[in-house]
Image (cartoon, rainbow, N blue to C red; front, side, top):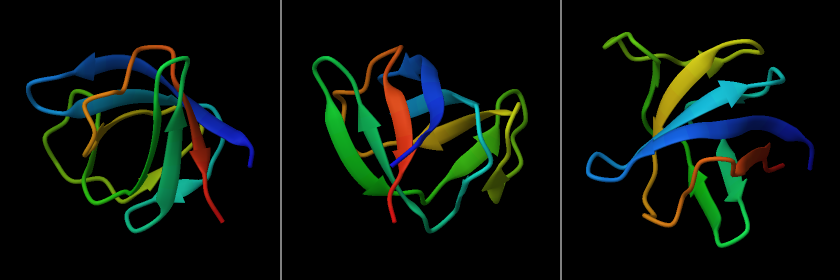
Length: 85
């Protein structure tokens, strides 16, 4: 698996991870893995928006910053994102 992005911020109450996308590669329906020193979360991307925009976003592209809803509260700033499969 190759790194496709990094968590730059995490909103615990909303369970939203802000991800700086480094490589093209994930979209709604894809499985991502979020790994860090204290976390390892695997989940299907069900909700995504461009950071600063309220509209749904389908595909995360290199250079974009997106918000993704996560199921696990263990996500931290600095965690890396991998696309599974």
